[in-house]
Structures are given as C-alpha cells and as structure tokens.
Length: 50
View 1 (cartoon, helix red, strand yellow):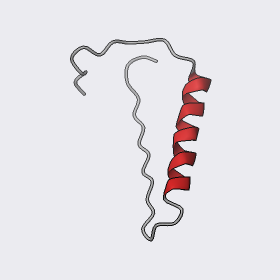
View 2 (cartoon, helix red, strand yellow; view 1 turned 45 degrees about the vertical axis):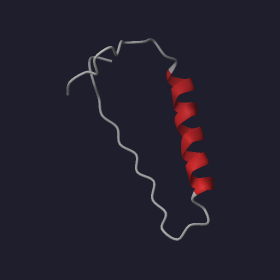
View 3 (cartoon, helix red, strand yellow; view 1 turned 90 degrees about the horizontal axis):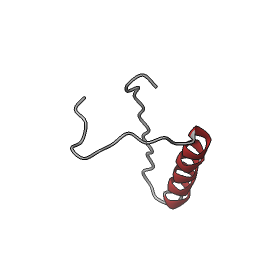
View 4 (cartoon, helix red, strand yellow; view 1 turned 60 degrees about the horizontal axis):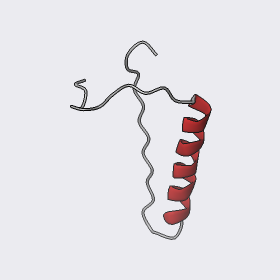
C-alpha cells in the first residue's frame, strides 16, 4: 500500500487509540439506533514492523 504524501509516522498510546475507536463505534451505534438499515463496518490491516 502506498503511503499518503506528507504523512509521517507518529508515536501513539495504543490504549488511547483503542478508546477513541470504541467511542467512535459507540457514537455510531447511538446515531443509527432508530434507522431501518443499520450497518457498521470496521476493517484493520497491519503495516510496517509495529
């Protein structure tokens, strides 16, 4: 996969990233609670050596 021009590697706290993702999923679930068709897709991929 090609990297985005201008994108740089950053150091992050994996627990904080996990919490952000959980919050985004919870917010999405709340937002789509009352719609007829509900779908939340999550994809992951491993990159680099980390």
